Length: 72
Image 1 (cartoon, rainbow, N blue to C red):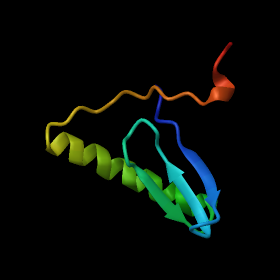
Image 2: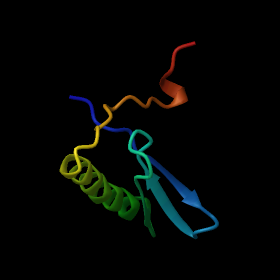
Image 3: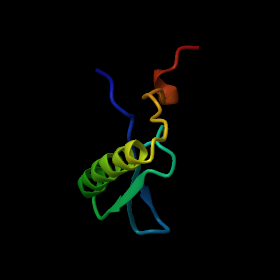
Image 4: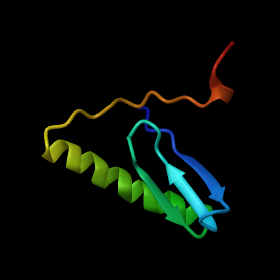
């Protein structure tokens, strides 16, 4: 089973770590460490999916692949 790709990066502007899920529009979270950001975005993912289900909105399949995994 595949799952959604998660990006985690440091933001100088926010002075902390941002985690986002590219396949789920606007699904992101903040943390003071990479682990905190990951834990927060996993909670955000569950909320995002629950809201989509509750509102009969489409749930996109996991498709995002970072450029390092793409074959030329």
